[in-house]
Length: 358
Image 1 (cartoon, one colour):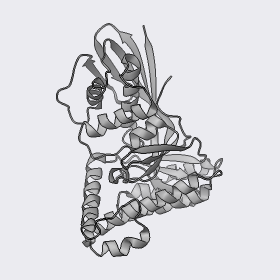
Image 2: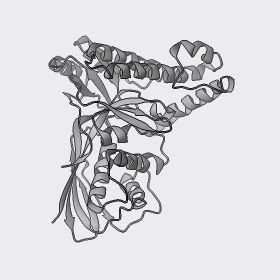
Image 3: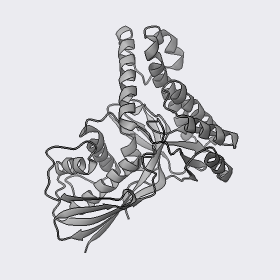
Image 4: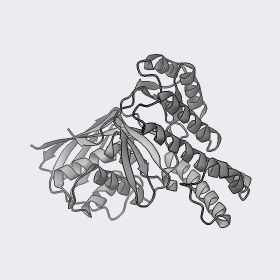
C-alpha cells in the first residue's frame, strides 16, 4: 500500500511579533522540531487520524465537504480550501501523527500539523497549480486564518512552508525572502505556561488598529513602514493615553526588525548585535504590549545572566516560549540556567529547511 511521510517544522519568531497583522515585516525561522505525519493508503474511504501525542483519534470521510466549520477545525478547513484548487480525495489513508514540538508553547505546533496535513493531501491527490513552498504556505494561511476568520497573520505558515530564515513582507503585494540557512547559538526555552492566542491577538490587533486610525485622522499619509521612532512624539500627541503603548510598540518593533534585517544581510553575522536587538524588541513586548508572564521574565533574566547575547518571548505571548541567542558552542550553561529558572524544557535548535515529504 502507498505510504507518504510528511514533515513540517516548528518555527520561532526572531523579530516582528505582533507585526504581520499590521502589514509590517517579520523575521522568522523554521526550527529543528517537527510534526511527522505517516499516511498509509487504506480501502475504507476514510482518513483515520491517530494523534498519538495528544491521545486523540478522528475519522474523516474523504467525500465530506464541510459546509459548516467547527472552530479551529483546520483538518476540515484545509480540505475545503484545497478542493477549490483541484485537490479531491479519492482514497482513504491510515494516518499516524507524532511530533516533538511542545504543544501550546508559541512554536507553532498547530500550524506545523496543518502544514504537514496539507502537504500530505497535495502529494496524495494533486492540485491544479504548481506545488511550491509558497503555494503550501498560502494554503496554510487560507486554511487557518482566512477560512476561520481568525485574527492571525502569515508568519507561521510561510516560515514553516518556506523554511530557513525568512524575511516576510506582509504588505500588498506580499513577498518573502530567504535571508539565511544557518544560525548558530539558537536555544528554545519552554515556560510551561499555556499561551492564549486568539483572544490576545484579537485584543492587541484591535487596539493597534484603533491607535493607527486615530493618528491617521491627523496624518492621513502615515505609512507605518516609513515611520521612525523620532516621529513618535508628534503622533502620540493625538492619542489617548491608553492607546499610546500600542502605537509605540508598532513603530519600535518595526525599527528593531529593520535593524535586524541589515545585520542578517551582512556576509558575517554579528550575533552580539542581533542579540542586543532581540533584547530591545523584547522590552517593547514586555513593557508596551505586556505579553510576558513572571516565569518568562525569570527565564530571560537567567539566560542573559548565564551569558546569552539576547532573548525574547516568541509569538502571541501570555506564556509559551522564548528564543535565546547564545554564543555557538556555549549553549549548555544557558540551557541549565533556563531550567533552573523554571523552564519545563530548554534545548538548542538549528534552522530547518521547511515543510517536505520524506
